[in-house]
Structure formats: structure tokens, C-alpha cells
Amino acid sequence: MNYSLYFHIPFCVHRCAYCDFNTYAGQEALIPAYVEALVSEIEAVGRSAPERLPVHTIFFGGGTPSLLSTEQFEKILSAVRDNFELRPVQDQHNRVTTSVLTTEASLEANPGTVSLAFLQGLRQAGFNRMSLGVQSAHPVELRQLERIHDFYDVIESVKWARQAGFDNLNLDLIYGLPEQKLARWQETLRRAVDLGPDHLSLYALTIEAGTPFGRWAASGRLPIPDPDKAADMYEWASEYLQGQGYQQYEISNWAKAGFQCRHNLQYWRNQPYLGFGAGAHGCAANFRIANVLRIRTFMERITTRKDDGNAPFPMSPATATQQPISRKVEMQETMMLGLRLTQEGVSEEAFKERFGTEMRSEFEKEIHELLGLGLIECKRSGRERRIRLTPRGRLLGNQVFIRFVGE
Image (cartoon, rainbow, N blue to C red; front, side, top):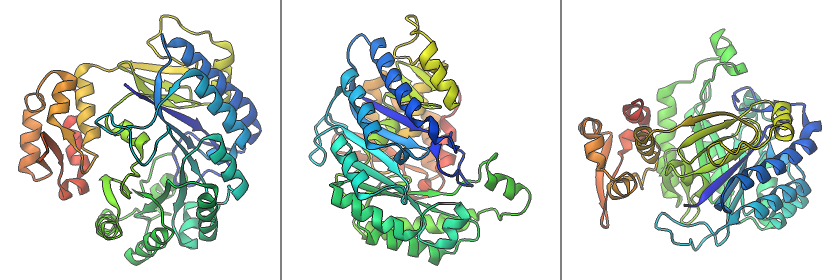
């Protein structure tokens, strides 16, 4: 089984008002020491394995990973190569893909924090996929979100990424903003598509407690987003992107042929991944694992805590929690995550091969009820029968997923 690696870079120049990720502004002076701690963590996890683990995707998220230098990324990737076995990405049938013949290595970046020289350095270091946090094409919305870039920065960043040799480019966008008009969202998406990305991720804004948006909404200073308008935006985007040659392969993700994000497919297929860095999460060897949150605490753990030879494999010195995953929970999560894949869904045959039992015997009541509500459908693809969301189910996904929660 191939693994995926996620690296969390928690530094930001400015923390956006809607963000509830584990990020910190104004601590960039800690980046050099943090990079050294990441390298040590990679080495420690590598030592915990009885053999070099096979890895086929790598993803740097944040925060703002593009605040690191190319030299720092080279140091991290060198440690990965020294401690893991890097493999080409494969499809669900274990065939090497034709579009990407090497390990998929993705980096999130904020427009306005990159240059042509920086992107060329990333490409030379081994990155082959870039994801730009665009969010909106409108100055007023970018100010509302407290983003530090404008759309001209986006245009420049896309141009430089292509010049640097990135032929796998994603743009992140947010819809359903407070008082956002459908026409304004349509203009944002059209302008993004005009830039020719290979992949698009579209996320409905969620007001999270503890964020400035959450506090402003609670006090009445910020209007609550209208879910019906957000649903209209989502439906329009689905139809528009299909007409532009993008296939929706996951609830929030669209790609041109051959450009699905292999790293995120690892999550949705409920396959093993390891998390590195402050607050990073992993799921492997029937354990869900999470690192300590604070940057300084993470670095202290890495330098002072010894490897635990009795810990579940594989384990980081910065691990804060480890939660065993029962067979039943693994089955439930395989259903919840797999149903997010709008075309693939969950194969009944693959489910039986993985768990040794029939999907319909384990979830007879849930499947019967959701079929009756028109939220899922059963489709045959070749020799496989697949359970997947209907178009209506994509809009009411939470009503589907909640059926597979709890033992």
C-alpha cells in the first residue's frame, strides 16, 4: 500500500478573517528552526518503520508554505528521499498514470508571495503541482476575506508558474460570501477559467467559531451567508465547468482529464497518510494520529522526546494524540469519504475485498433509506457496482454522511 505525506507549514504574513486552520502570523523568524525540526521528524518517522515506506504523493499546506525558501524545501525533500521510497502516482487499479510519471509533489501558495525565480526553484527542487489560493476576482471580496493579494497578482502568479514548468495547476475559490451576488461569483469563476487552470477547488464559505468572521456574525456585524444562494452558485458552477471541459470528480473539485489531485484521492479513498509539522494529522496502521499544535512546542518535542519503540507504527516524536480505529469505524469512514467522489463513489467489490464482508449487509438500512430519498444511486461500471451520490445528494451531502457516523 502506497502512503501519502502531508507537511503543515503554519506561518502566515496575515491570518485571514475566515480561517480556522492551525496558523500563526508574525512568527516567520522561527521558520529556519521549524525546517530543521521537520527534517528531524522525517528521520524519526523513517526510523520507526521496519522498512522504507512507499510514498506516491507529497503535499505542503498551511498556512502559507510559499514563505519558505527554495533551499529550505530542497532540504525537506532531500530528507524525504533519504527516508522513504518515492514511487510514481497510480490510479485505483495500481496502474501508473500517463499524465504524471513521478511522485506527485504539491505546494499551496498565496498569490503575491511568489516570483518567477522562486517558482523555477520549486520546480527544480521536485515540485510538479501548484495550488494557488485565489478565492475571488473582486477587490471588495478580497478585502472582506482579508487576503493580501489582488487579481493582478493571480494573473502574474499563473503566468510565472507556467513559465517555470508547472503543467499541473490548481486554483482555489470561495463562494457563498455574505451578501454575495450570483453574478459576481459567476464573474470570478469565468475569470479563473480564462487563466486555463488544470484543476479547480470550489469551497462554500463556512463561518467558524473562534474566527473574526465567527465573532462578527455572532454580534450581528456580519450577515450570515445564505445557504440557498450558495446552492444556486454551486449548481451553476457545476454546469458551467462541465461545459468548459472540467470533470467534477469530488464534491468540491473539478479537473481536466488526467489532472485529479492524487494526494486528495488518498484521503477520499481512506488510504494511509502521515502528517508532519505542528498540528498535522495522519491516519495509518489503524490509528488516527495528531501532532501538537504550537510551533515552539512542536520543535521542543522533536528535539527532546525520544522515539517510543512501543508506539504504534509509524509515530512522530511530536505526536499529541493517537486514537485506534476499529474495523466498524474504518468501514463507516470508507463510506463517508468515498461518497464524496462524485463519479467513483464506493465500489461494492472493493469494499468486500478490503473488509471481507458485503457493503449492503453492513449498511443495509442506511443504503435502503438513502436510495429511497434519491440521495444515492447504484451504478454499474464494468464489472463493479458502485454506490455514489446523485446530483441532489451532492447538495445534501451532510444528510448522507451523517448516516455513517457512530458505532
